[in-house]
Image 1 (cartoon, rainbow, N blue to C red):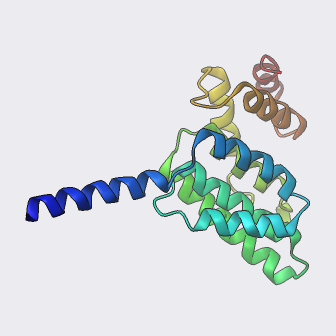
Image 2: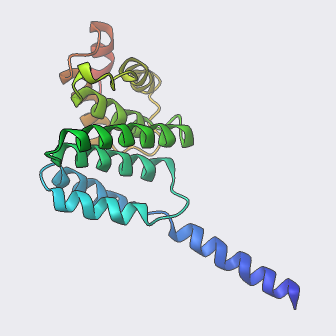
Image 3: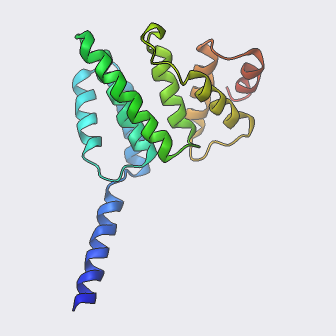
Length: 176
């Protein structure tokens, strides 16, 4: 009887853990919603609330939550809250990177947050590291589960950011 209860408990726990993640379709929808959230504070808050209800988040889901925290900073009118949300965002992004160091998409999200954060605030300390990691993925043609659109869009953003050297731009241009 105790073994049966234990097996049922394990089965329930594994189902709960599996449900804590998003399906590929849900991730595609989330990415589309993230683009809309750039100009919609209500959507930003709704998505952030939804993601933070998930236990045992993957690095990628954690990074999406961090990106939404950065968007909360963008939408806030209060300078104190803007700084608070950016700090929280970058802490969340570091957690995401710690969970999945080799994920180019996570590195790109942190790079883009730091790129758009005014440098005088001192929150752009990982730009060079992330740029190096992103370019390394392109040099090694190592994109994990990233789709072609993401690969192309990241390369274009990196070039447009004007933060890449001429040699790095050559590597990135092959993917546009």
